[in-house]
Length: 111
Image (cartoon, rainbow, N blue to C red; front, side):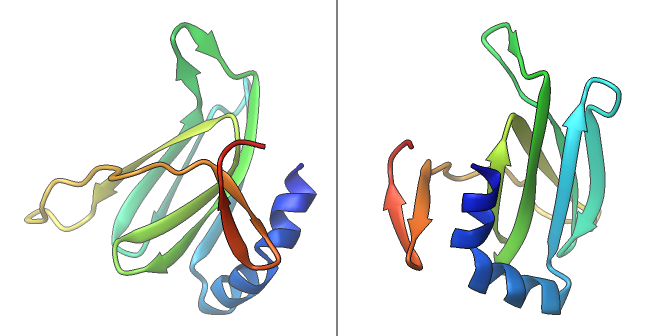
């Protein structure tokens, strides 16, 4: 599944790599969190916990797709953004869309 996701995002990923606007990560019980700075935000990625269920491992990458816009792809993680500018507005995740890319087009829905 992870290779399919990378393949589907290849054009976007190559562009983000050339600009330095992508970060990848692998998480497990021994390293359950990754912190990095991206586009003026501190990004905190951790193993997902929802309704008492804890992911044993996770992987993914975060791509900056524009000002204050990011794309996350992977499995078993959650992400939190904190502005590095002390006077900045509060931030949050406005929407989460589950789906996949096929032939460069976004297909909404699970799978």
